[in-house]
Length: 122
Picture 1: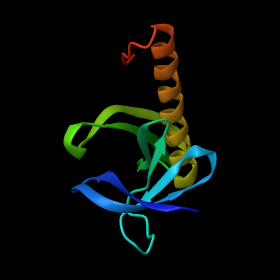
Picture 2: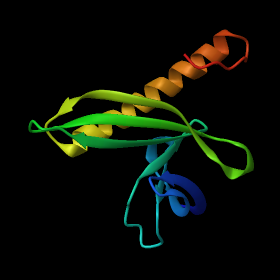
Picture 3: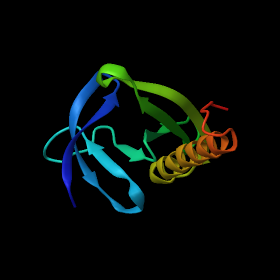
């Protein structure tokens, strides 16, 4: 695994993080050098994606995926928030949220290719 400095977005703002290149073309970001994840973010096809499990009053969690892109001057801009479905476990919901982000990005890239390179968000 290779390490590099990355930037991830947290509720408190933008902070420097250590990132580790993982399988499936994703880079996993952590908020400190000891690799204890506070908010895990991945780089996927030029976007930054993150997912979390929103606890529900019923037994379970709803999957939520968030897609960001890098802006000017080192900023990170949220471009899409996707709510999924209810899952029994937090882990299932988080994995589903990441999948929703990947699907959305893949669709945007297909739209870009179909429009001759002009990027628009659906």
